[in-house]
Every structure is written in structure tokens, then in C-alpha cells.
Amino acid sequence: MARKRAEGKLEEIADAAVACFSELGIRRTQMADVAKAAGVSAGTLYLYVSSKEALLHLAILRVCARPLASLTLPLEDPGIGATVEIFAARVKEVRHWPTFDAALAGNVSISMDVLSAIGRELYDMLHEARRAIWLVDRCAREVPAFEQLHALDLRARHRDQLAEIALKLAGVSSGPSPEQKLAARLALETVAWAAMHRLRESSTNAIAGLGDDGARETAAESFTVTLSTAAMRSRRNRPDI
Image (tube, one colour):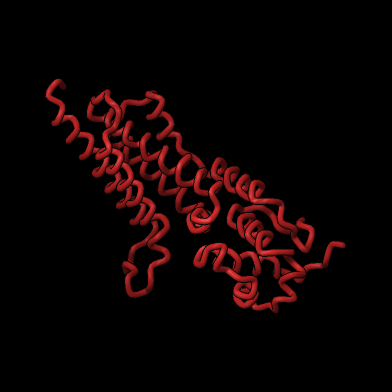
């Protein structure tokens, strides 16, 4: 029998679950932790979700902008495969990288401006999807399907593709070296820190006066310099060019 929900309470529970899972991971998070963060009793929590696995699914629904109003309560665990599929679908929804795709396909001439535009595209996506990424980053250590999708299929693949694009700027046709892949990873991490991780800094470490526009442009500039410098170094090391 579906239970009647208190106004806004499911959303509060979902937000509490996101915070707990993002900080503690799956194994260390207890139902009592989420109940306390949501300001409800453990008994009340079980009126909304049937298990910790269902609570994780609720958290993924929340960070992936899925509507919660139509859910039947208490929410049952649909299985980790269904939970991962929600995140995979959200990745496709927020992936707006026209310059990146055009550069990878060879449809544009690679320039410093193109690299900067790619950096801005990455910033915008990471900034929009930051809660989902924080959550999945933490849970990937315990859920192989999340690790495969996020760390390998997405992060590693995009790292190597960025290295390939940067080499086009230098006119180098060979595949990227380990050093160039490292440069691409560093460039990605620069954008990720500016778009997401700076927002979790303590007040002591936060950069006073830094807004989103300034962070976006500075990240794009640093991204471009890191990639282009590594690519040009590769060119200098190729005597046949």
C-alpha cells in the first residue's frame, strides 16, 4: 500500500542521503545517519525507503534531477543496475560539448581558442552535474559498475581524447604519450576543481571574491595552457617534424 508523504519530506530525506553517501560512502553510511541528517526518526525513514539500497537509489534520483513526486512509498531497491542506468542517462543529458566533439571528429581547425572553448564546455557540465559526480565518485569505490562507467568509460576516455586534440594543435599525428595523457588529466582536474571542488572548500581555504564567471574563465585559460604546452613540447621532441 502506497503511503502518504509529508510535504517536502521525501526531498529532505533524499538530500540528507546525498550528503551522507557523498561523505561516508555506502558501507559507512547507516540509516540512522540519514534519519538524523533529515531530522526524522529511523522508524519514519522506513516509511519512505525500504532499505539502504533503496536510499542510495533515491539519492541518485535526486542528484540526477528525476522527479520524486510520483514514487510509490516506501521506495523499493530496483537493483544496482537500474541505479547506475539513471546516472548514465543523466550524463548523456548534461553532455553539451559541441566544440569538443567537432575537434575530435576533425571538423574544426584546432587553435588555442578552440581549446579554451572546450575548457568552458567541460566547466559548465561539471558545474551543473557536481552533486551527482561527488556522489558517484565516492560510491565508485564500492560499486564496480559506477567505477567502470565514471572512472574508466568517461574520465579515462575523455583524458585520452583531450590529449589527441591537443596534439592536433601541434601538428603531431602520433598517439599521445603517457606524459601527454598526464597533462590532459591535469587539465581536467584544473577545470574540475574550479567547477566543483572549490565549492566544498572550508571558509578558511575559500578564495574570497572568486565568482563563477572568474572561476570559469581562469579554469579555461589554465586548461588551455596545460594542454598546449604539453603538445608543443611533444612537437619539439620530434625531430622529423
